[in-house]
Length: 404
Image 1 (cartoon, helix red, strand yellow):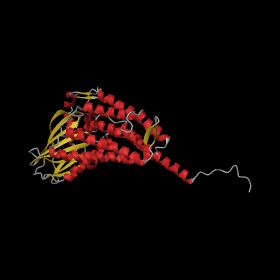
Image 2 (cartoon, one colour):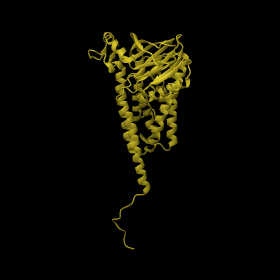
Image 3 (spheres, one colour):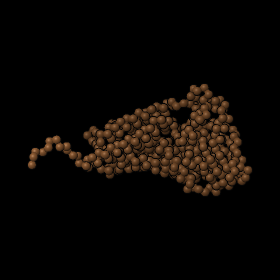
Image 4 (cartoon, one colour):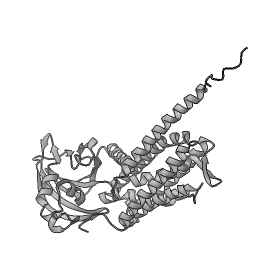
């Protein structure tokens, strides 16, 4: 037997090659998830997502309507700030009343018995919701026959803001709510009857709204992500090291998610039922601060192994943020309970969807320098910087002014 061939190329085990390919794919997937989160978060504004509030009161053959639309949304759509100084005055809004009515009412359709109910604009006022000034557009629709079923078609702002939602209350003349709904691009046309049927459909609508609000509530998402990033690691000997088992990571995540859920459910309920109220500016500033603290804790851990406590404490604040959309709607108590439960369930489902996508990928990559350096440390630093900008904008009210 001759001497071994010194130039013979060493073969790597097939399993090693396969493992490398799998890791590469996981890296790409995790990068895609993070890129999506940051791409969504970077342009996010300090205030809550765009909503309008539409109340329709059925009165025999006619419908009396009140439509609250954010002035900042109308300024984007048709231009209200005549001098372009970033501050709206009452005169600027009043001079555009006719344009506001024309813009809004051409994007709302009411019909009964297959016949369109013509809309006629009434007076306009200005009111303040938790996130700023709104025009209050009153209108009337005459259907020409007794209304036992109403078809609603809603297209406001969808062409320029697909995230916009119309929150609808359908009422009887005595003020009783007979139906509620969330109007979105996917559910822009809905049908209602006077018997109040369709509670399951209403509940489903608020579940979808809860899911949507957690997915586009970028500050809530980044707070949750900041707590989840170190869940697949343990801090030992002054550095992050891989968690030994998936069970350890999963238990840590379970504690965090449960604490956050319990906390924001408490304050969401209290705030929506108007038992406890806090100024919106304080709440939004505190939410931004919670993201900063959670992200910085990943860079220099102070609360490690007990992040569920931070999740609970700050979750109480986030609950007030979730409540703003329901509190502004002003639902009756029986309808409010239905909306509250459905919205809360939706928030949890949206939250669990994020965990289900993130955790398995993060666990597979926990051994890599890429995860510890690029994802955990660099990602947390980016989140902290972004949240700091949010905090400054919210705390010092640096957004453009809309009638104060």
